[in-house]
Image (cartoon, rainbow, N blue to C red):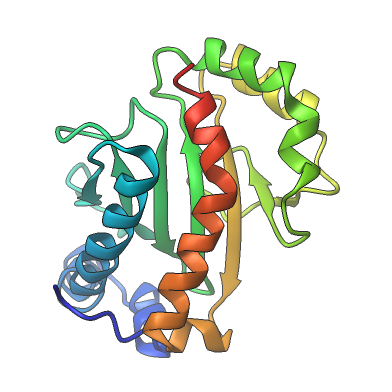
Length: 206
């Protein structure tokens, strides 16, 4: 198993590179090997929690032909062939932070049923979550709202009723946070984050 040594400022600087080819080459050479190491550990942890094998998917950005990606990520899901249609865990980078998400994105075919299950139990979402957890309604942007301030009902109704509606729960870690520089500490932090989120992952399959 490859050892993850942590993120550094050079990883975030990748998103300052101009041009699709140059940025993609840096993502592939610099960030994706780290994702592979992170994915090996976290998929093993999550598979143990799920009592079922979960698989790592590293974003290829294959559809891009002109604009370079503003972020990049790995996803962990129960389907070996893909993750976008399923609840999945994400670890990824923008130019100024790392994100850890449990993601329910617009490509899920049963998102209205999942939203209904969450709406019925929405008060429990916040009950045990640490104050630094955040909610996002769009996986392509940096925008997120602290879970204590989020209007969960309207967020989940939007997820249910809007075709492109999404719902993500997790944490955002600033690029200068020391936990990112320590590979072992980061993996433990990510595992702890996903443990808090796991009841909601499980609920999405009920």
